[in-house]
Picture 1 (cartoon, one colour):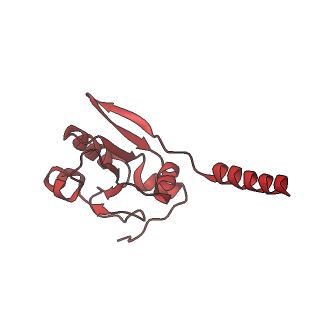
Picture 2: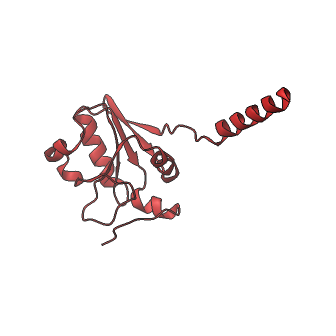
Picture 3: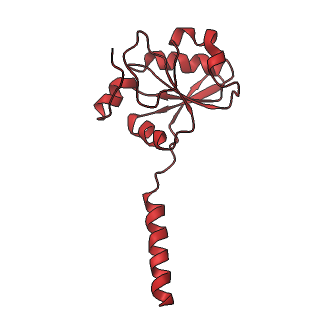
Length: 139
């Protein structure tokens, strides 16, 4: 009986560990002496299941949001809107736009301002939709 119970507990633990998603590490992009991470749509989707970041849409004009978005700040007004972002420059911030270019510029701006945990969705909402995920609040 003890052996059966042990095997049942062991099997349950192994299944739980096997079903956990791997941590997302992203691809590092170096700009000067700083860097930020680039992730794809599947990696972002995994990150959204245990969201531990501020999620910012930087696209202008508004073209919808990925579910879970916290803020909309125009990519070219990042510096004027720092009060909306975490005061802790080590806080994780994930950026996106429609195609990836505006969020790349916003990421570069934030790292130049001393932010250390900036993540950017490669391909933006276009890649997100191509991966089969939905956009909400479409204009």
